[in-house]
Length: 429
Ligand SMILES: Cc1cc2nc3c(=O)[nH]c(=O)nc-3n(C[C@H](O)[C@H](O)[C@H](O)COP(=O)(O)OP(=O)(O)OC[C@H]3O[C@@H](n4cnc5c(N)ncnc54)[C@H](O)[C@@H]3O)c2cc1C
Image 1 (cartoon, protein in one colour):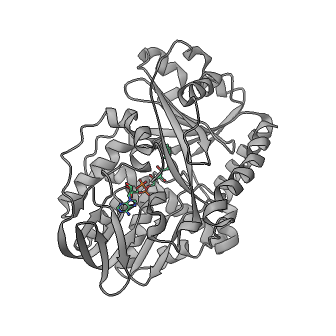
Image 2 (cartoon, protein in one colour; image 1 turned 45 degrees about the vertical axis):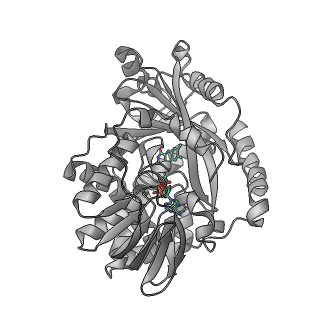
């Protein structure tokens, strides 16, 4: 759907370090199931697993390969919370609703730990995550976040890292203070996603790859069509991220595709890698356009950031990304960059996830806004609960209102670029 998207994914460190199973079949002919899931990323797989566990007959239709989208390409940072501030939930749902939403995000991180154990998924999981500030004014934001989460949201896993303590944590001249979260962590997202796909299959879910959905009709049953086949389903879950596009024109304007990019260095000397970040936790700064990084089990620095609001890959990407990495870790001057890739996140106007129904039996899960590694798992669980008749938690999240991006299909992107420029400038001041 987006120019250069395949090329971007082909250069991913993750694709280079997994052994994919043979491709799943294309959907051919007609099939009857209880639930048809569109999209073989983390949101779709989570929905399918939860539904299959409840006894539903489920099929997933994936346009490319399982994990081809953001789920197989992301920074691997498993973080409690959502991309938006809690005050968005407070405004829309009241304090108790916002607390419930926060608690669900914590449940999402626990769900990943549970699934790794339950399905025996080898995905390089490392506990621990730290948000860092690049200057004193951003440290004030960090401290405010610490106070809010500990006092108002009763989150017990945080530790504030004062400026004089930070050098013990990160060997970088760039950062000022930190907020450590022992409840979050990081993993190899493609290994995790493929592990979930295997688990789903073991639970009886039918997986179809290279089977893009071209059309669907609401109704009972709903009909979901691909070029060579069709599925009759009592329920449909749309989990296609920005790639759904015009398949669901009602919800497309709620999200915008924003490109974000990652590099991985060659393997570093293990002792050097150990000295960069204490306990090898994941790190992310609290700028609006943020840098996120971690070291991998094979001792590479994996450094993400840089965004594109135009869906075009920024020029000279590996060098620009390398420059960002060296700004944080000048000691990596000699380290070669071996991989550079990227993908699209589905940002919503208010950065809150966008869950809802297009019809009573037609669910959608989107708007993770670059913070979906854990939240997608929760999303699938909530959709499954709702389909099984327990819609309270899904409906709480679905109460968050989502406005379309202004400007219609053609003018949305320029309008977004202008809006983001303001925030980028704020980061620089
Ligand atoms: C570079 C990058 C870094 C990121 N880093 C982080 C991070 O560190 N931490 C974090 O929490 N989040 C991160 N994210 C966000 C996170 O990866 C996403 O929020 C999450 O993976 C979204 O999962 P999904 O299942 O909704 O979408 P996807 O994984 O994109 O899956 C959607 C799937 O639907 C398929 N599809 C679409 N349309 C159709 C159709 N018509 N028919 C059939 N199939 C279709 C697509 O092919 C795709 O495989 C990052 C994202 C990117 C791109």
